[in-house]
Amino acid sequence: MNPLALGLGLFVMVIWGINFAVGKIALAELPPIFFMAVRFALVALVLVWFAPVPRAHLRGLFIASIFIGAGHYAVFFTGLAGVEAGAASIALQLQVPFAALVAALVFRERLGWLPAAGMAVAFAGVVVIAGTPRIDTNPIPFLLCVASGFFWALGNIRVKQLGRLNSFAVNAWIAVFTAPQLLILSLLFESGQFDALAGAGWRGWGGILYMAVAVSILSYSIWYWLIARFEVNQTMPLTLLMPVFGVASGAVFLGEALTPRLILGGVLAVAGVAVIQLYGLGGAGRAARARTKDGKSV
Image (cartoon, rainbow, N blue to C red):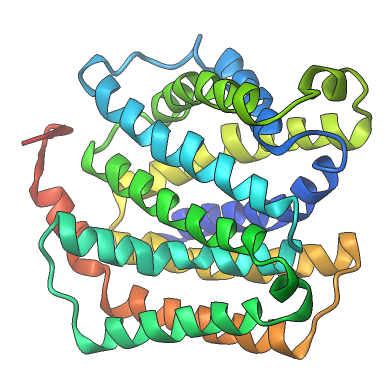
């Protein structure tokens, strides 16, 4: 990975890390699934006019949108409403062992003992965090954050399988497919959404604009560009920095305490993820490219 790509990847991690604190602030005014529906509707309205239509890959992008949008975002932000931003950012790191497992199944890669040990350490770290008093009394929100990492892994593997698509097209059409899915889920499981939106102040609208512009339009366009051009073991290690920025943003903007269990669990989770990324994901990236030709799965 060249210096420009590395710098772009680090920039994305900063945006994603701060995103946890911004989400917590916005969720004080808006229901989580509806919050995401408005975000993706705005992203779609901005990008769809400028992005080419990847007609040969619309079905694949629709499947990815179910995992990334309706799966990951609906589940994660529902969990984030009831858990601290720092703990949620660490729980989301389980996307990496989930990605390794999915890649092993999809690309028929054998996992060695080092990646397996890394998975065990990463899960152990999350278990340590889950034992903190606040999470232990109501583990459901934290478990939702963990589960969302599985959906994120599925979505990113699916995007990788599609080959080198235009990053704006990927972002735009995932948003187009995701917004109505989230709106339907919100109407089914939430209430008072439109009143909340009408009464939202700078926290709610600021969160929508930050996530729509900085996260979805800017950072995800960069991320899709990176994962289409570099191997999985070159891009995924960058996500090790996301919980660092996530925990820091929770402490700075929300006053969240850096407890010993949170620090220990975070260190274990990040260490386990690092082992997986160093020893368990390189083959998946090569296998993905071997299965693509001219941007089409074969």
